[in-house]
Length: 251
Image 1: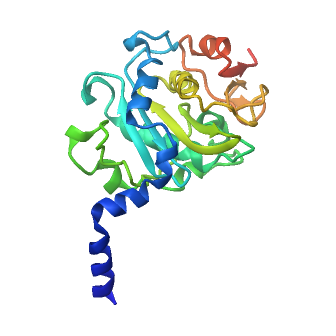
Image 2 (image 1 turned 90 degrees about the vertical axis):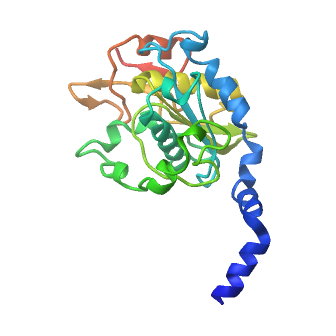
């Protein structure tokens, strides 16, 4: 039986396996589209300030089952943005996809307070661990390219601060995008702009008072009034989010 299985897989070929793994990715923005949207959304490439450090960024798109479809960066080389943020961007995309539905979007920013000790989702951040072979395998020359080693694989991971948003098209969730490389509050703002650039931001509903998955700044004395608040990051991120409709504040 093992020999038969091996022969069958060999006859399909690696290209066939990759095509099967990426079938749902064909309906999502490709590497070029994600790169264009990211570059248009961060200040180092001429975009508006995001309220944080205005650094270069990583971005990842996953499809409905968490398969990585595209990974990119906004700088000229993979060393122009925090290297650790490559995998974090994939974690954020996986999280937003895994905990959003057709009718209810939860951004990674919405999970910040809910996973703190004593809160309703404490421990969530320990679930669905990253597949380290997928996250750290391959040649670094391919990082952020169309051939990034994570593409076609499910990297997993849960991240519980700003930067991950579900993607919606035709009234349905179609996947998610994750952005990382600045303060977590700025990451959310940049992800919001990226989603709008991609035309996949028609959110059906969410826990934000605005009725979407925007970041919520309602933490006072260490407690979130609504249970889904995010900490502030010390820059101008709150004002930027408010201005572009990416969040709400109790301040």
